[in-house]
Image (cartoon, rainbow, N blue to C red):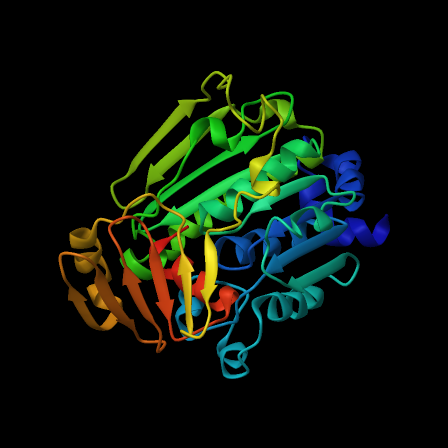
Amino acid sequence: MSENWARYSRQMLFSPIGQTGQKKLSNSKVLIIGMGALGTVIANHLTRAGVGHLVFCDRDYVELSNLQRQLLFDEEDVKQSLPKAVAAEKKLKRMNSDIKIEGYVTDISSTNMEDYLSEVDVVIDGTDNFYTRYLMNDAAFKHTIPYIYGGAVSSRGMGAVFIPGKTVCLRCIFPTFDGNGQTCDTIGVLSPTVDMVASLQTLNCLKLLTGNAHTIPEKLVTFDLWKNEQISMGMPKPNPTCPTCQLKEYPALGNEDQGHMTTLCGRDTVQIHYTSSHDLTYLEKNLSGISTAIKKTPFLLKVDLHEGERFVLFPDGRTLVQGTEDIGRAKALYTKYLGL
């Protein structure tokens, strides 16, 4: 305890945690999905706080544009094109060698989401898309694990804690979600916004792990830092037809994503169909800043990306990602610029 006291003394002096809470932290396991802006801040805090076992998953690699807000990475990571999970694991292990830290370079999907849940006490959202959030939500409620949601874009942030058997789930608040092109890669994000959301997520995680869950309000917190606005909305009553927390069908873990992504044989193209419609006029304006060339007709919108691929978007919600047959690559580009 003397060594732990030296490392965690200021945290244990905080009476709601104390030595008892610190021991609980050391015996806890947390899963973070996404090691970008939110995930790096969360992982940094939890590593320094002494959570005994930290696991995280991410499919991307470090790019120069990440450094403005993804606090675990630096220019050397960019030069080496390191996967975020690899770079984060190296940095975190240098912060705290007493805990177990595991980073996985993987794309979370319905086929592998549950593989990472063994003995996990809390699942934390470090992603930027609702496709993966529905996966986390369904997996957490199926396995009765608290799920901490968070999101940040522009100067706006929001967060909530969903606890199986106590609160509604994410689907009760957001039954559906259509991508509207508002992602960090299209309208930007302020680093302090990310820090606020991630710090709130971390705080709630510490409360859960140290036996202080009763202090977590059952609310969806939203704020706009730039406008100095904050709203806390109470959780709604459970949706009796919710397939997750009421019917216990967990659709995201089944075949919900099958048929939405298809490689078009011989065309070097992946078709993605996650939303019911595209507003081509809106997307033409919103995506012009990230395109080398853009052209709209009454029937489609062509967007040439700086990465080399091309989006072809149709009013019925279909998107062709031309220039690749790699579904993971197409999904990453779609998420980056359109949301998911």
